[in-house]
Image (cartoon, rainbow, N blue to C red; front, side, top):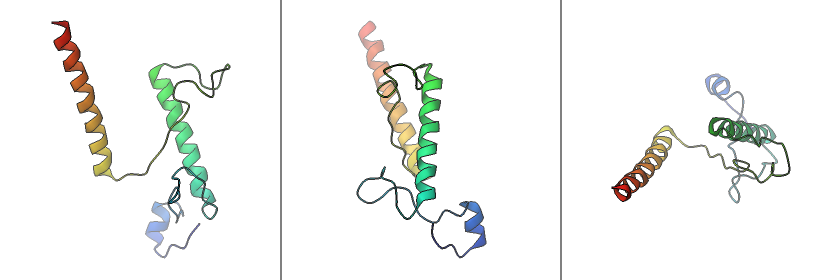
Length: 107
């Protein structure tokens, strides 16, 4: 997986020394970082399942539309705290604009 000098970093990152993704395609598995690639796939599946359950969608692997149903694809990117806050606030801003436009149209 990689060489980690500091015991503190080793325990904090559970021994994973490589990042997730590759320079060409962030979702590709890394041949030299099998553990990180497996962790990425597991985390992505858990996130998509949480999205399906939170939205009340019942196509979690059942029926003919399981592979193409709601929340069946996604991309998980590692971002810092500031970037994740900016992404969430940007999404909320866009949603607020749409709600404002809908309220204006109704009046």
